[in-house]
Image (cartoon, rainbow, N blue to C red; front, side, top):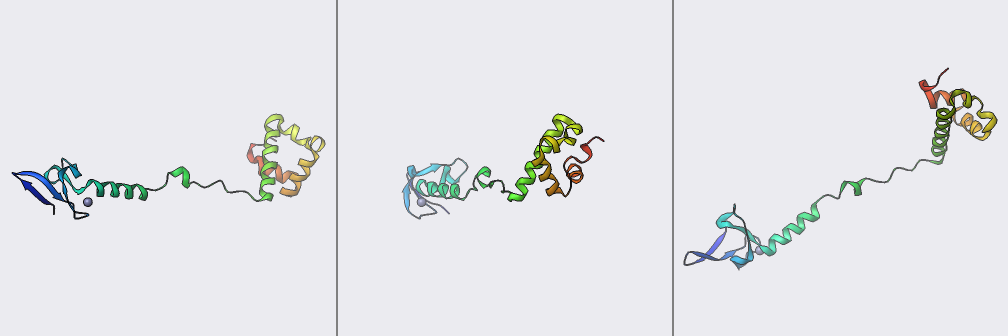
Length: 132
Ligand SMILES: [Zn+2]
């Protein structure tokens, strides 16, 4: 309920429904849809409420998105092996991969260790992709 103070049927003062102070009409924002064409809360309360609403707003989605989970060293190593073997396969096909023991023994050894054998490594990394 809004208390309105009229003078010669002109609204001169209104009681703010929030802070309960009686204020001049100019201390209220116009609100065409509102009662008597003004807001029921004064400018000061309106600003305070808006500030409050702003604070309540959720953080932008990109801020919430956490950093990519860091892989354990063991998994990182594995990822690197997978990446390298895929790269070699894409570049030189199966023939080049078969010669990997000759030109990249460390990669071969690592792949064998991580995947329990070279054939397993190829099967796991390239799967159906690989041509016989
Ligand atoms: Zn107020």
